[in-house]
Image: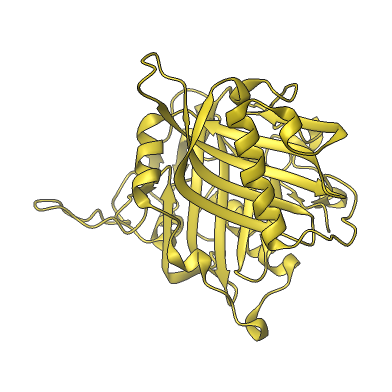
Length: 340
């Protein structure tokens, strides 16, 4: 794993833990997914008593710890149609990406938004709620228009071909390691048909429009959405993403080969904007100001290769923490998974 001047933690925390190992759970896939709907319905009704919360349940929205009943509870009016579940029976957690609608100045209208949600369930009660609310109307409309996740995310992997939890997480983590200070020379586990969607927009393999010319990775000064997943990484032009930290792998669905993560991408600017490509060209690229993306990212992995990626992104204060990690974990690029 690459280290940076920001001080990656020592190898002793390379498999950092965000909680105690999960005990055997009596909440199966359907049960976990059902808790998502029960929770969202309670938020719509602004009724904390409508779902079973543990006495010491913790709740964060966009990295801020709040009292249950605050934040989105005050404004959510309905659910959209986009629904993407990643249930993790082993960890007793479920992650979800969906569209929602909030208050609008005109009572006859509602404002679309996107939610990425994690619930932890213990003994039939919700003990943790973590939600990212992306209040970007264009992104919400794009995601809603997609109707649902790429069908590949929903396909069952034959039992004989299923990878272990650790293997799935390590493959997903190679994506983050390959992008951090990207140099084009790493190991990039992409299938030939890999595709990525970000905030409802396709960000790889975008077809050319009439009159457009496909950028050449050997001469371009910025990576292109017209390129494949592998071409983007092998170009070395994503170097300006200099720190990918607080890598929390919160839900793993071995049955479908899906891995759900919450993570932060930092663009520190300054010296990190100027770098050399694999063929020795000097390029300057990336945001001029310090910039952090707060990201929920899901990977579909088969036979050790990433085939699909879906992410929700929200720009947040530079260096922001999640509210679920220590400062040291939040600034580390170590894997965090509570079952490891």
